[in-house]
Image (cartoon, rainbow, N blue to C red):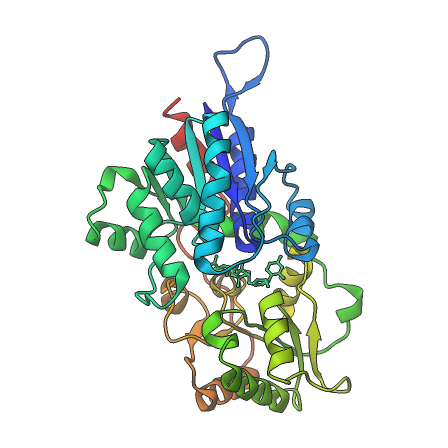
Length: 367
Ligand code: UD1
């Protein structure tokens, strides 16, 4: 069986890595005496993220194979980026003629590849299906809705995702609850995620990531958040690895903290370094989806600067608190969390390091 994977943006890489690995380890027992793998795999990188720090370093640390094809689409408006992936992906998928195309998460590359395949009648499998924020102002929510409607196999991380798909009329036989593939990667690499030397001996620190358009493209709001973070940095060191979109906006908003501030802006960090910082942070402030999950697994408090989340299990079973766009609430929750002693991590069902293995078994049963 030939499986073609499509990745494009940073959060795709940690989801695809364990699936590529698990499929690669499936042996075809019929091919004796030689040990053959059951699957032929092709990896397509759309090039949505292209900086070394947003892409290459993740491939290295996650031990992913080099992409077979790079579509090099780069940045653009929502429509440009989606259309460019479609235009460049169509001839590749026609030429490679896979049995299945696997897409990940909710980025523009995901929906673009799913659209192309559905019209060519190539079966699509969606990893991380069924998540819903119910907020259609987010491009990711549109991408999730369309990708799930077009998919032939839907691999979900949690029961809420299954319920969302059922409500949208998706046939239950297409849906398989496999667990969280991103946590597979976290569990595998956590032993290698030592605190980098430059951050050793920092004492207590707050870790921040912000990149959603709703937060960073609104410059007065971005300035307000930076003021709040500067206040926090009087009590604790604040580390803020900055996404390229955010970096541009901070310059435009004239909101770069002074070089002496304990609010430290950092370049985007590689996977292992960022994981180490999450593990040792006293609290994480974010608007990322993946970080809500990783902190929940690690048992580190997470304050999410959004009005909603497509990952409600992190609120009910994890460590996530939605603070919305409310600086007073953010300050109050921060004070509370900084005064608390750390809580023990809670086990979330199927966040056990074996989600990709379940996906591989489902494909193996269809060979
Ligand atoms: C995308 C995803 C988002 C995900 C995020 C993780 C969509 C709709 N959004 O948002 O769900 O959480 O990735 O990072 O697909 N840029 C660079 N170098 C890069 C990549 C981007 O400089 O390697 C800059 C470009 O100026 C670009 C901007 O960052 O315009 C935003 O990149 P884009 O891919 O459009 O979306 P993200 O905000 O990264």
